Length: 86
Image (cartoon, rainbow, N blue to C red; front, side, top):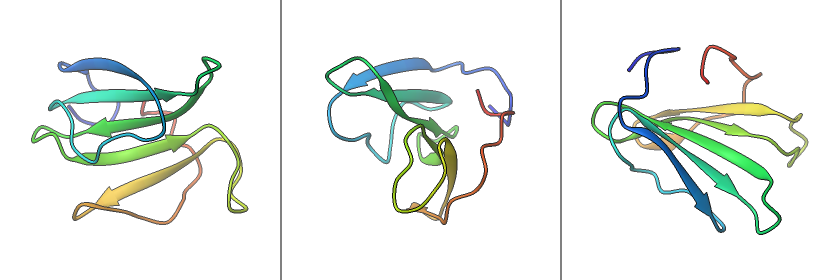
């Protein structure tokens, strides 16, 4: 899966406090709070490693929504949302 590519691993809905740094290869996980609001999405590469987050709430002075690319297993500084990731 590349930017804007097919999610062959599908989309997982998670209700709770956080998403794992690893998941199903070529998939996305969406985190929802107890009220049913989506608060974060995380995309995984062909090995199942996180490659991008989208936060749907403003926090730490970042706008809503905003993205965080991942590199080397670590979340990087925020960036404006890249709507090619969906």
